[in-house]
Image (cartoon, rainbow, N blue to C red; front, side, top):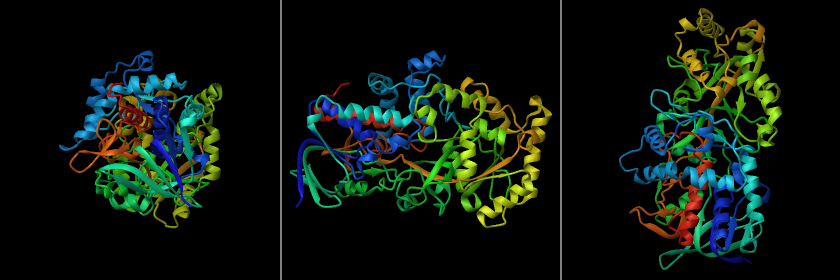
Length: 537
């Protein structure tokens, strides 16, 4: 027998966007049914696993760090990085809304909820040969995405109107019902029965498509080369895009699914939860990035922190579509990091002194774990030994020790000549990185790879990892889903990644990084205002 539910608003998806929408709607005294296809222990979704960085504009923390920012500068950077097309009016409008509202609607709202940021604002995606972030904007939640989500979940479950909240887990929505032109209901299945929900409004907070690698490959942008057969999954299989297809069947507009935020430095998860499960490295800046033959990738070297979109393009066009990063132990312990809350336990658990100790003395804990557990990470005492292990890992004798020796020694010789004679773009970028206080702590001072005092050598095989959908259901500035003629479908809203983080693609072809968690908050708060009839913040 089917279970039937009724409420003012049904929210489909209990990740960050869904939880924020639920809190805001309960604040407005509306009854809410929050539906998720996963088990209760996944309440909060992928945000629990996020590192917790947010791109925020003109905040007190920026001022404390001596950073001069403004919505005008942020929008200029955003539009340059996004490369919007002539018809991307809704994404552009959302971008403008974001830079103007990020302080009040995200930063201040989180502070009111008891969520704080690490005091040093980071500078990421600063741009390669086109501007990215002109100034540091990357605010890291103290407690990572786990702390962010668990704090918001506590607010949700202890809400003064919690009697108006119903949580339904292991409930998969399959269909929507229309009545007199309005979306009036949905139906779906549980492991044991069917269910239906009647509501005045439906909010789709169901995530993107990037957990469905087959769908990702179908919409793959050829600017990244052919769709990789060795693609890793850095999302979750429940982000499968099925509700995107349902929205299209209702006449809704789904745009720019080819826009994705993937990473070039993915490795296989040593304890995978699902097929092709990967981890996303924050790659060392002082390591050398090599192709499958052991040649240094170039002539423009690959260096993280500048243009993630371009890194994916370069790796996607390599033979075999994977790369190697070569470094020594000293580089690894100082610069290596892995994105995510579980990989950064001291920040997640708010343990300041252990965190500072690792920053100052090196993260030996992480590197030892990677060497011992990660199948894509290998160690050796010489280049010949390293070459043999690299070829054994792939099962192909592609890496040539002579190639490695030639390019690594050439790089090390540049370092030995002294800063005045550095004529290598990677060394120039390291020099720039070390001008910033935060980056200097995590970047070596021109460390040669073959330094005998810094052994052993480490090689990491890296592949593109599927992460975020930057396109999605097209929405207006009230988070209402639009049809092909740009008219709202009555009763249907989309927030967070389902909406391409706003407008079906708020970031364009590349993100300024840190615009994902924060856009989930912004779009959900705006949806709740719209549903409740509040048009102004």
